[in-house]
Length: 100
Image 1 (cartoon, rainbow, N blue to C red):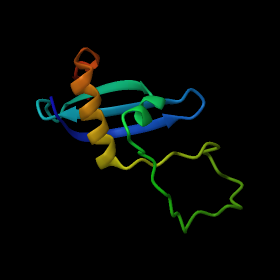
Image 2: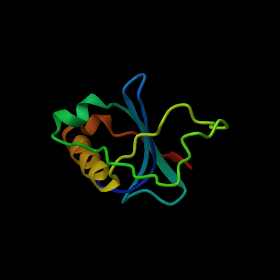
Image 3: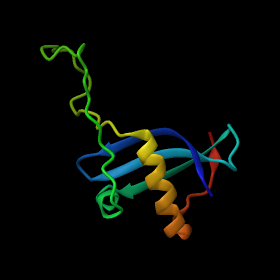
């Protein structure tokens, strides 16, 4: 099993859970796999997935902000590498594909 693409991800900072949707090389375009992984495991595998966000167009004084929580930006290539290693070592944890 090898991951070919990340569909979406989100790090919930309150629960420290990485919510990730992805496709493997065996999955079709109408399939996706969804998993929730304890984000602290990432560092145990030697990865630092977070990237610097340089949002020059963000207006800090915008009172109409709908997102109270900032999204943690991850390096997608490193995320794929981590997930491939994680699922290689934890084959029983690979989620089943579901229709997308």
